[in-house]
Length: 202
Image (cartoon, rainbow, N blue to C red; front, side, top):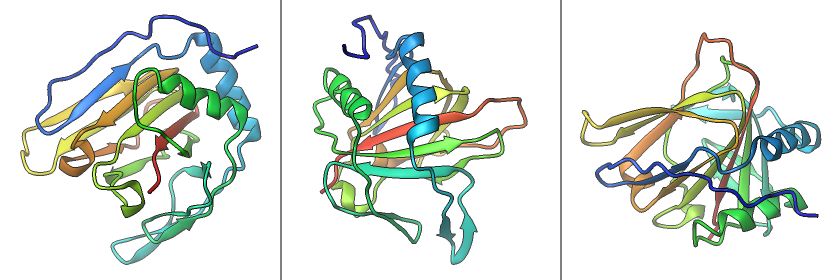
């Protein structure tokens, strides 16, 4: 029996220069999102690894795990990740995303934000392994966190919105070339959040 049901995910597509953003708040039903959150908490081989930022080495303020259909490694911030395999629930997610996005995703970086002090600073998903115009699909499970975007050149162009449990965010077009994004620390009481960022490796 398939995990996923057929229901309307809804769509919000903000009008931004040099970007194509699509946000589906209800991509997964509450039951689907709850089931996956519990499954990934228990079954993903989470790692806490160091990264290099501006020449200094820090422990990442979150846990990660990289999975792919190929044996290609993925590198960022001085860290090189070797892929684990993609399991059946994650492949089913890739197939479900394919109904909304034609990019043939074959890799996923899992992120576990344990509390509001875990974060991901300003960056773009533009590593060479992702090709010239990377397309990213991001699924959020668990605690709600705010997603921040800012244009690299047009300083007044900024956007902030919450990423809900069971939502899908698609970043396409020139988004990774022209914009930066982050998940900032927060003093609000927030539960653990699991984020799956799907990408195509080249």
